[in-house]
Structures are given as structure tokens and as C-alpha cells.
Image (spheres, helix red, strand yellow):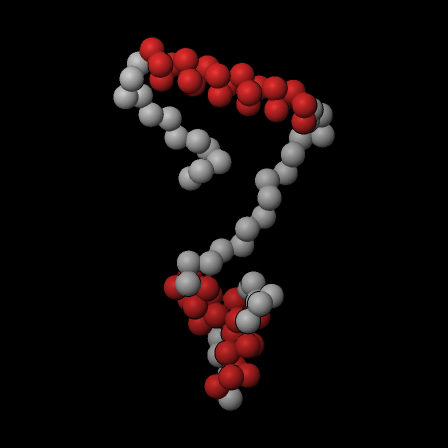
Length: 82
């Protein structure tokens, strides 16, 4: 079923399998049940400087390490690892 990313596509695919019409709502319910959702990358700003961002990440990593060294038991949650 690769490539079926919308409720209508899923409903059409199921309709073909079972031999009768299936509503878009039922397609959406199956997508929700499988915990699937549309994944779209976040837009980036036109003036984004990739190298500046990478430098900031490196600096942040060292600062987090310093805070954890000074305050054992402190935990940080990365926004990339939800």
C-alpha cells in the first residue's frame, strides 16, 4: 500500500480489495488507527545561514555539557529526539 497517504487513497484502495465503496472517513480512521500522519518538513527562512546554525549547535552542545558537569542529574530533552 506504499504511496497511499490520504484518506481518499486509502478508501479507494480498500474499496478495490473488498469490492464495495468505502468512505473517505473510513480511510481516515484506518490512517489514524495505524498512527500515520502527513509528514511535511518545516519551511526554512530565506535568510537562513546553515553554517551559523551548525556553529550554534556546536556551542550549545558544549554549554549543555558544562551545565551537566556543574549540576549533576540535570537532564535536557533535544527537540530533534521527541
